Image 1 (cartoon, rainbow, N blue to C red):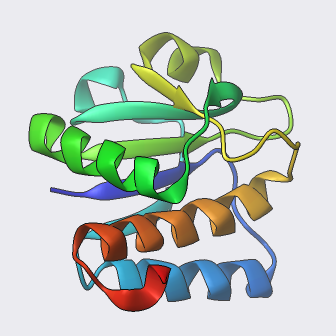
Image 2 (image 1 turned 180 degrees about the vertical axis):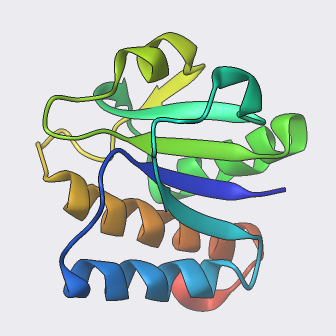
Length: 136
């Protein structure tokens, strides 16, 4: 089981990288979580599990609903890959291959901010699933 966040481009700001790494490290105490940059070299056949596009038109959740969503999808698919596109949105191949789409907010945010928010929400979801007091 692996939760992976894929970014369409590199994050250059150290502050964003550091905060993301903090949440990923904490989340990895419950389940393996990693972040990677899409090099464009992966073929669809190489992707494992569920591919989820992060998109403003996607489904929105409360933190508790997102935790339950993750729990159920991990049971069915094992691995979940969350793909965050750039300002133009998701690449065409990701849009075509993604089984589900999630929105972090009704507001538009920079992809680097989306990375931090998603990493924190994954950590929060895993604490909810595991009965950890972080969410309280």
